[in-house]
Image (tube, rainbow, N blue to C red; front, side, top):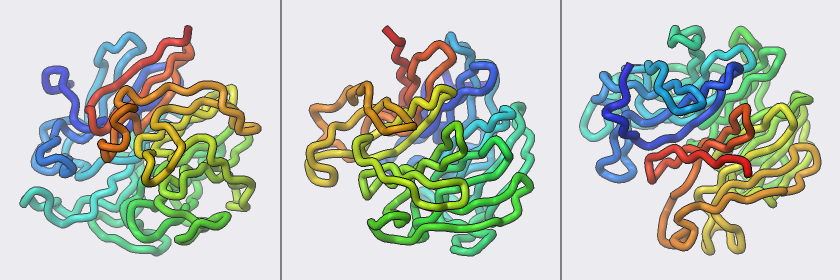
Length: 308
């Protein structure tokens, strides 16, 4: 169990398990040069870390598995899911070892239980991805993956055993179309919420992919979480006057039922949102006491906001 002297790499994901512990996914302490974060060449450093609600490190693991950790999710049974959005055979001159374009399911102790996709193989098939960005699991075990950092712009659905079921989405800005689907989550009824980041909206679908609605009031989504009370938490770490005019960068909180925004936590670097390419939170969750935890990619930190 280690955490490199308490320092973070790019923190991309944060979630809580059924016991209330907080888990963090990050990119193995590397941030040089900027934009080249990777776990390649750092196989002694764990990208997945478990903390109690007080911030005490309880466990860490995942060494040697990822190149570019990205999506992060804990399913109703407490299993840990993560995606590897790596696109390159070499990173910083080092061989990526065939990593990338995959989705992993782990037990809470780090045992690999399932792999979706082919290591290091980009594709648009029923068993391949091109830089998958996130994963979420329904109460019946169905698995949903946003295949979003490459050209595919789709959601792929599998059953609980990893068998392919269906796909929906294509490039575009119409209903059911995507431009960089970056995150997804499910509400209490099983509806699928997709953060269609470059289109600046949350799209909502029935379990079978039928389009329901599109909401723009939650900004440009990088990460999302829905709690047991159907409260929707959305991070926006990329809005500015060029790519989402009039929208502030920060964390939006509201109703997953009707889309009402009830609270906003501004990005600490809000005044520099036009200068900074990406800042503030990507991952987000709420703990059992109602506090909001966010994972900041560029600043490499975890922030916690206590409910007043």
